Amino acid sequence: MKVLGISAYYHDSAASLVIDGEIVSAVQEERFTRRKNDPSFPKNAIQYCLKEGGIKLSDIDAVVFYEKPFWKIERVLETYYAFAPRGLTQFLSSIPSFISDQKLFLKDVIKKELRDIDGNYKGEIYFSEHHLSHAASAFYPSPFRSSAILTIDGVGEWATASLGYGDGNKIKIIKELHFPHSVGLLYSAFTYYCGFKVNSGEHKLMGLAPYGNSYSDRVKKFKKLIIENMIDIKDDGSVWLNQEYFDYCTGLKMVNEEKWEELFGFPPRKPEAEITQEYCDLALAIQQVTEEVIFRMAEEVKRLTGSRYLCMAGGVALNCVANGKLLMKRIFDSIWIQPAAGDAGGSLGSALAFYYLAKNNERVIEEAKPDKMKGALLGPSFSRHEILYTLAKYRANFVEVGDEEKLCEKVARLLAEGKIIGWFQGRMEFGPRALGSRSILADPRDPEMQRKLNLKVKFREGFRPFAPAVLAEDAKDFFEFGFSSPYMLLIDYIHPNLRYELPNNYHELPWREKLYFIRSKIPAVTHVDFSARVQTVHKEINPRFWKLLKKFKELTGYGIIINTSFNVRGEPIVCTPDDAYKCFMRTDIDFLVIENFILDKKAQPIHTQNWQTEFPPD
Image (cartoon, rainbow, N blue to C red; front, side, top):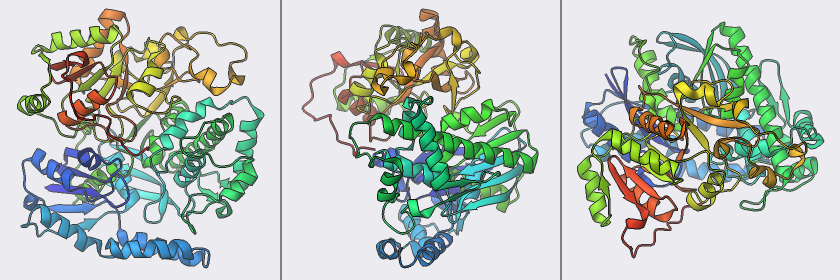
């Protein structure tokens, strides 16, 4: 059976292809259109999935959309009615878009889009529930025969979080939290107030939080104000949000700015404005509140299911700080998180939900494999001929190294010399993390590397941390807990043996002074609180990337490197060799490695093109 899953029309649209239970391909539309978080119908993503599967659209048995549009419209209308007359502004703004975008007739819209791809397509369109799609994306690819399931995001149709249980090929949703009460929307409201973009900048808020002074009275005060005025957290993790402080139900903004400024004592930060300490402290306070909610939800789903294992999805499941701390609490023996936990992953979940739940197909667990996601390497790869075509197009100078051993040895040596590498290999990753196929790599021992990567390569805010990729077998040498974390979705803490002693006044220092304080022997991947968002690299999942790390270890004694996504701020991760060459030329990346081809920046011809492509700030 061939099932095509689709997510679209909100943000981060994607397509996924499942054939007889195997995940064949999955990719976000943004990678093709070069528009970050592209919400449009995933035409390019669908065409790629079909090509990868060697089939035509007319061969597909079922096309499944990741949520139920009529339920979503019902929620919008009922919300406006409940808050009338305050909701009139948003009602007048939103309803025309539903009509003009034809969201009222989404089945017909999807059929038309599919027939534009293949005029012979006459199949039926099916619809999954939003949080069921998230739950299916987490449970079915996981290594567990049965597990508890926790999904948390902004909002789907009505649900904003769900507690469930998966067993074999079945999923049962046990409890749901409903709109307007939402942990995801709460976190997004603080993202907005701290000057970052909603549905894009939440990871920045998470990265800013450690610069807050956890020992200060201000953080404690902010947390107290949030809990006493904005949110009531129940024992089971369900929440009630005081809508007097929010504007997403009745207006066109996330928050009531006047009430927030009155509560916290300072105004919302303007995008790109200077970050002052109070925003760092506010970020830390809401991160701590969010963690408390997640922990309580996890404890509740544990109580309800008795499971030793937990699967997670939904946008909030990308909060790797909360995920790592949850695993450290040992509520569950093991946690598996869908690497494309946001709406893009809903395309995969909808396809899997149809295959297993609607059609009752048997679910087979392969004990020899860590999971069914294939390392999330589910996107396009490119042939030698396609790469050579791009290199010829730009008259690029390159060296081809046919032997993988020699290639990895050469690149490892360049890294050890302090060079920054654009690393483009094999199939592209599905989800927001670069995992060693579309990555920028550097030496974590260099104390200047974080500054250089942020300012000269990524063109992004200087406070942003970088993730380490470490040989899976060496994780416990570098990190306290040494978790297996192949999808870069868990934090761990730098091993005490690698840390340097902090000055007595460290926590009182201004955040910029903390930023460039050398905290460990791997300073470029050590965040201000000694945390790191870890990727463990496994030989059986990504053998070439593993081999590169092994060669770096042979040269330096360190089986660990910086791994950040191959893009600049506001740009989707590169997809094609063409994307990679352009990004290489517009940044201070020293060498580009595309499969077996190595390009030295200094050897490239002088081009008349303007490589400094402008991407909207994310």
